[in-house]
Image 1 (tube, one colour):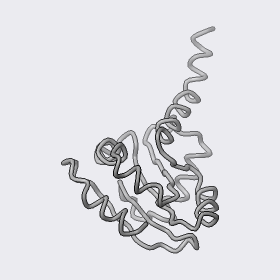
Image 2 (cartoon, one colour; image 1 turned 90 degrees about the vertical axis):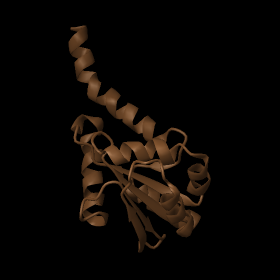
Image 3 (cartoon, helix red, strand yellow; image 1 turned 30 degrees about the vertical axis):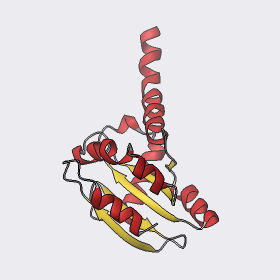
Image 4 (cartoon, one colour; image 1 turned 60 degrees about the vertical axis):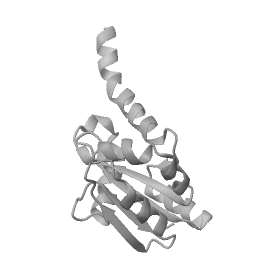
Length: 150
């Protein structure tokens, strides 16, 4: 019986873990409407990051090589940030979060490119985007993009 309870609770625990990884040491939002409302209130641009957290190798490396850097943390203060994850393992997100992310993906990332950064102003106008990562540790282009659009 204990094993059954653990198995039934596992998806919720995984979802909580994924959410905590996103929000750890950062200001990432996971809801478009909430993030855009904050961008409007704070008069900041919205930085949308599209990732496949459990299957996209460049996304995984970018998380380590860029998001953990002090330069990124300083630049991120100029943005309201939105994390849109499209994992292959559907148990990593709640069905509601997966549906939300898929809707944002179809609206803002029609080609399904990963990783992708997209910058929108507080009036929801798309300003710029940057995609890809060569996984060689070179994040200068990403930092330049982020500095240019803050």
